[in-house]
View 1 (tube, helix red, strand yellow):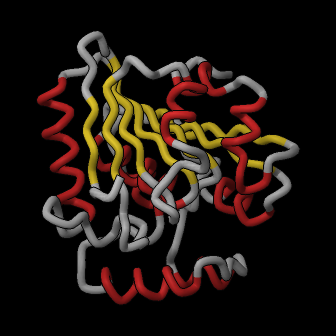
View 2 (cartoon, helix red, strand yellow; view 1 turned 90 degrees about the vertical axis):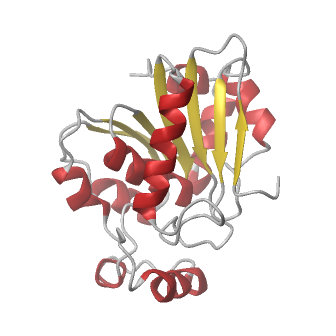
Length: 220
């Protein structure tokens, strides 16, 4: 999977799952393993990857050049496929993207595992988040003059769409917990906390058999 986007349509699919790859371009486990564990083998799927590791701020090669043109591309794909329901899904950096584009596009359900909710320098300093320094500095350079979103909170607040954003996070990872808390009081955002799992919370949820309910939007 070396392309920034892969589209897999199903003859019998009714729902569309749009996946956003994380810093390593995946979702914390082999893609088919995630699909199988989530019971979504027969649904439509689009998988996006930001190989520049820029939190999707820089667009995707041959597709878009910033977050807004990426959102336009996704909107056109959704209109063409005409699914019953649309889910935006991501882990870590991919979770950031799922929330970001869900806020911009609307009419989707967002499922984010251990996501970042800000990458702005001020907030990273305030919360002592020093992870991914090289990639973050590169993101600043590449997106400084672009239309960008380095903080998801104001974007979520301004969004006029009815939101359903489900964030799954481990209490063990203090930074992940801070990122979840950053948007916890916004209408439509639901934070699900777990005692274990760390930044790899999605693997814990797989092992506990929770992914099918989560991915169908019925987890509570």
